[in-house]
Length: 87
Image (tube, rainbow, N blue to C red; front, side, top):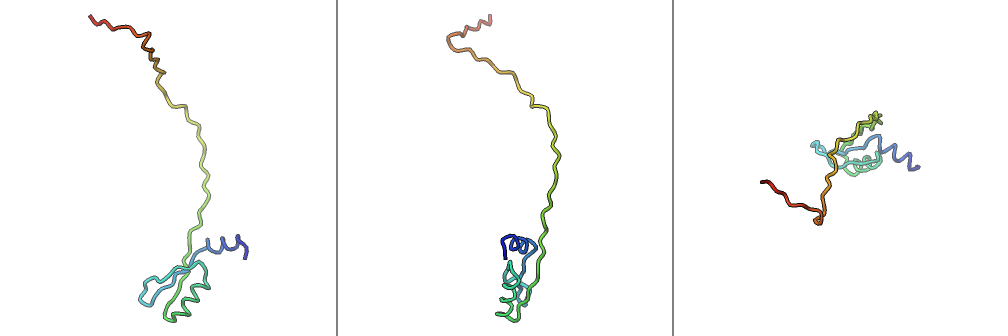
């Protein structure tokens, strides 16, 4: 079986093996493994669990206006500082 066939087989679902009291015993990716477990334990049963296949979603692209920014603050070097006179 090729890798593509394996992926599509597993992606379709998996098999859960249950004890007689209804508790889950194991999950199997292959039906033959679930059958083998049921043959080892004749009172056990298995069911196929279908999985949802992901769907591709197209998301529209909207161009937004650029973010608003504050103007750059120019900080003077210490050599150009002038004292502040508030009187």
